[in-house]
Length: 294
Image 1: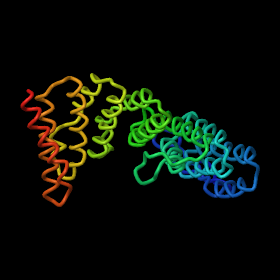
Image 2: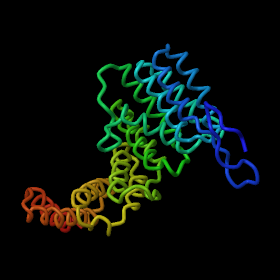
Image 3: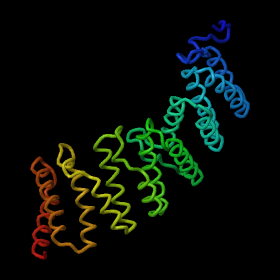
Image 4: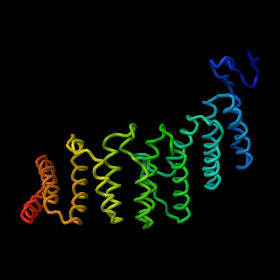
């Protein structure tokens, strides 16, 4: 067994394939993180980079997470986005990097670019440079989450955030293509409601892109039975409004009548609970009109 020292202690057995050897670097980590705060950014990152390697090789995951978070915090406090993105990319691609460290890197950066309440709405930016930095960081975070099941929820939200940024810049095609990259219906860590909201965004953007075939394919990802569940009324109405746009393009009066009838049935139920009754009256009128036309 390795001998304990004043700086680090070892635990576990490295031989026989039973346990990985773990070196406790918690004391040194606390000291060097405190020391790094008084150094220039480049020197501080160099100090923590060496410590990060020791923590990673020594399997001290709690200390590794602290070092990774501290490195990002230093870049953010210095308002150096270039160093932040570089540090983020470097730490996340280290050889045999721990999954907890990668998850911590992503979690640490998220509040700096998106609203913490919904997890995907980009934070407002005043300057053009700030908006560019925000998109660069969102893109890098999204790249880090690619292929990692333990970060699939974060990837979906970051993808939605990137699509919002692209749409706000007027690039509808790219926004739609970005969302299509995520098959959110297969994600197990996301709630039904969030999945449906994501798919509705895919539908909306593909319709704006005038890709009607793709929009119809996307619409089939939504199980109609899920829309009938409690608390889904708003999403159900939005779904059939979007679907009616497709059927309007196809000039299918009967399907349009079905869409407006579904909106009528949902909206009238909402009105019975004290909601606005304008929507169900309009939907009922449209239902009758398109039934006659069919």
